[in-house]
Image 1: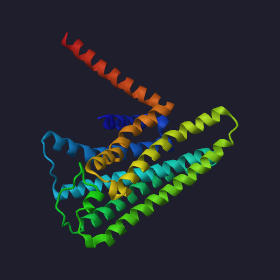
Image 2 (image 1 turned 120 degrees about the vertical axis):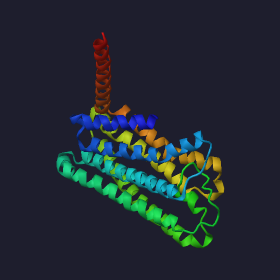
Image 3 (image 1 turned 45 degrees about the horizontal axis):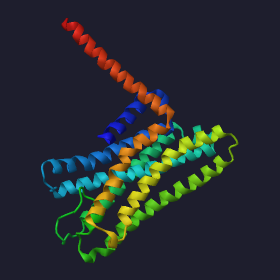
Amino acid sequence: MPALLGNSLIISAIACDHHLHTPMFFFLLNLALTDLGSICTTVPKAMHNSLWNTSSISYSGCAAQLFFFMFFTSAEYFLLTIMCYDRYVSICKPLHYGILLGSRACAHMAAAAWACAFLFAVLHTANTFSLPLCHGNAVGQFFCEIPHILKLSCSHSNLRKSGISLVGVSLAFGCFVIILFSYVQIFRAVLRIPSEQGWHKAFSICLPHLVVVSLFLSTGIFSYLKPPSISSPSLDLAVSVLYSVVPPALNPFIYSLRNQELKKALRKLIGLYFQKHFRTIFCCRAFRM
């Protein structure tokens, strides 16, 4: 619920407040959409199974769940990389910000992130479910994810497993290099800022993004690359929750707590909602009288 409510509020606030129609908030809106999609892909089915005391999912349902989870998760990673570039331009090249990050450029970058995520999800889903499964059909997790499905595949498919992992690691490493390079340049620029106010503004822009990137990468990398020797059902469950549920739930609070403009827009949105709600109640009561 916190993830659904927080991300929905961010999407509504950015969409309704024209003061937030800037590149930074445009990408934040897209990030909130990925968080919302990721949560809606895994949590409802897990809640249904828990309420009805079942743990089954159809083959097609598992494939769809894996596809959408990979789609929204990879889109989030691509968007975090683009948001890092946005912060790099705003701090290191502020005079060129309007040129490098115009409305058309932002739309193209966001579209590229979603398109790459779609192709990435199709590739991984097709490769994963084309493997012959000969070790049962129990995933051992509260949602369908690649590492646990690969455990069910036959041993002669190691080459394809390595190929899937190599594509994912290469793409993730490429984005990580962009993020690392951008933040090196950002911190070099911040250290040259003479005023304390400039420092505070720069860190208020970068710190939430850095926290979100660190949380997303650390939990995801540990889940997919942890050695089999330390694997256990309870640890796998905890790690899966950490990277699939916790980041989407925390992202709205991390961004809203550090951004004054967003907090102002959220207060305005909530105020308008309650004002309209109480006005409707008052009008209904007056009509009955």
